[in-house]
Image (tube, rainbow, N blue to C red):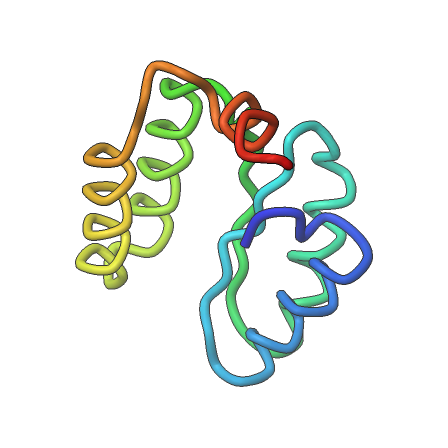
Length: 103
């Protein structure tokens, strides 16, 4: 779950955990916030904090590897998501694509 280190993202991550999901909590740099979300999830289920700059392919790959290591039972879903990412990846970082697509 990207952006889950605070605010709406944290609330959604906690609700997913309440519903039984194991949640990978992503942050770009707020490790403390991500860990606070994982701590909030702990009373309902399992969470795992990861930090990654989603404009860098190597960090995205490392994030997926960390998620697989923590939740090996989710391997099929994580691998499908990673495969989709690899197929749709361009030379431009996602932030540049959003700017280019804006009206």
